[in-house]
Image (cartoon, rainbow, N blue to C red; front, side, top):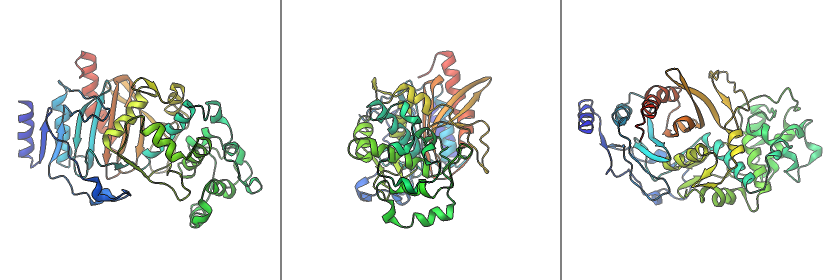
Length: 400
């Protein structure tokens, strides 16, 4: 009756959507039609003629257990229908997992269950987790986080390094506090010569052309140099390449086989953007964080590292966005979301265009969202429309 009522509401509003508590076929697309380089290809995907909204997702045998939600089903379906009716930001997918089970799955517009969505800066969070995997395997240690990155990047021309280059640690780089300061126009000119960017030469550019690095300059600044330095360190310490390491030691371990991660011109994965993940894979990343680095009971990443990476390392600042209630870890964001008088800490990877991989430990909740337009309302929508339902069901003991 609930489903029939919501479909009726949708028809009255001119909404085209399939709403179900199980049995729906998630929308797919033939990836082979898009070639090996998927970068930008999502723009050529035809928009869905009918959104799919499912409160009992199908088991696709992809390593994600599925479940069903009950008492909060109607409110989530209503929110999904509002998304279809363009009452909110133009999202491509909204997935929710609770208690390690996917319980809500919806796709709109460009969303497809088997096509990886651009992650933009959410890529940075995956880069941080790759560093954590290297620590778990012994290629780095927690103590190494406070060592100069120059100690790992062998072969740098030390005579060319700017004063203070040895002050930059992994801790600084992954919290956007490297202290590297290069004028945007100057950096653009330096990066035009692709021959200078191979191997560790990119790090040489960052550490040779910056203004002098001091403890005063090592404050938060969101920039591309810092994640790339972290990725270059990863590439330097693991056997083989960073690309192979991420694929074999992280993605394959988590059963992520549909993805695209574009390499930079220096041969390592783009650290700050350019990864593409399916919405279900995003749920896996969020689950890995929620479970403190464990995947299927196996410790992929040290619990202490997850705590540090998703903790309060830096105070973010920006001239255009109010970060008063935010803190920054290792490429992870953190902010409290309120339901009544109670605060729930959201730890998340965040990418421009509307990509969110959110873990909320107190509710055992993972929320994955993809979109194709920037906005500043998504967290508010989660706070006002999604969390209250799960918070109330958790209190009453009726969570799915």
